[in-house]
Length: 290
Image (cartoon, rainbow, N blue to C red; front, top):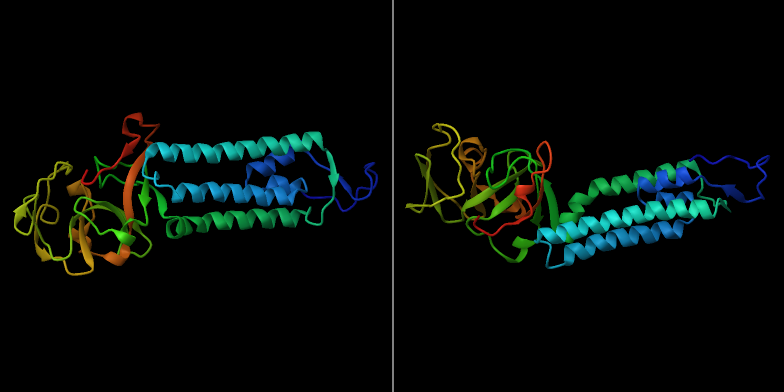
């Protein structure tokens, strides 16, 4: 997409430049409105960005973000906008092959524009959770099987606990207190003031055995997974366990989790992939406890 220093010998009037359909489509494919910038229509590029982030904001503010069908509608909207922009840029280049040369029609501007857009995209996950109130996660392990399995794609409500408190059975995302930045997904089984104990794979809360139909025991336990001495959950902390009890690193190893490490509650599973789509696992909206 580099621009020639001069159009002398190309038969173009002064101040004009020739655009290529392939380059216009290629630039539009990379996103960020780059196709419009290449075509000399930077105002359209900003409109594209406004529409894109407007759709994302409307999705976040909607009361239906916990519904898998709404996630599909959101993704379909983004895909439609992207395809529409690619098609539109190609059509503009075909209808108007000769356009005005703009000061920003330079290779370094195109590269800078794209880098800024990609940088914003890399920072967006944090902004999405803090500003828009939701986040998307891919489950990397089997520690929460069968409720969540490797390859599941889920949505988390990042604002839920601003006004509501934790409940038993909530499936939550939190930052590992021992490894900053590492995000875990587990189930809440203990709240401040509770005494948690595990005896031969049975969870006891305040001396009462808890029925856990979601728990999975896939292999012989050991002293670290099948037994846990009584521990009181102090204020400002909560206790979590993975549903796949013998294959989960949770509060039995990490201890109670600080409330400040909480990142949100899992609301739905909207896709699942493991060597191909696993249609039987989606869509699914979680009710607590699961």
